[in-house]
Amino acid sequence: MDVSIYFKKSPLIPAIVVEDSTGEVLMLAYMNEESLKKTFETGYTWFYSRSRQELWNKGATSGHTQRVISIDADCDDDTLLVRVEQMGPACHTGNKSCFFKRIYQRKTETRE
Image (cartoon, rainbow, N blue to C red):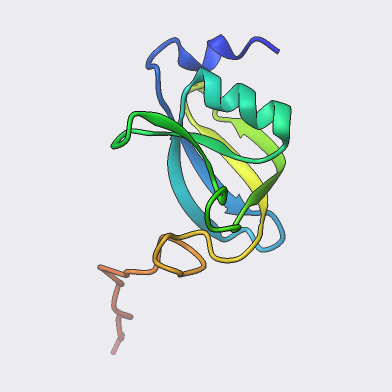
């Protein structure tokens, strides 16, 4: 598959990673062409680290791998939704999801 269509706007695209069995959003990472190709080849997630400027295989050191179930592109072909089977926590902090710090919640309105 020619994945270049997804990188016409930018060399990196966001990849939203979701636990397939629950629909829970686990993390957001970035992919480049090489990491997407490696993901297809191996069946496990590969990303591009913007801070380290290198490819990384999720779970390679921690053992908390992500086996890919499916990958969908959004309507503009510039964001990916990656459904995975997560082994262990997804977040480097040890939390199941990287999204565990609620910063706002709407208060319930009472009507009189």
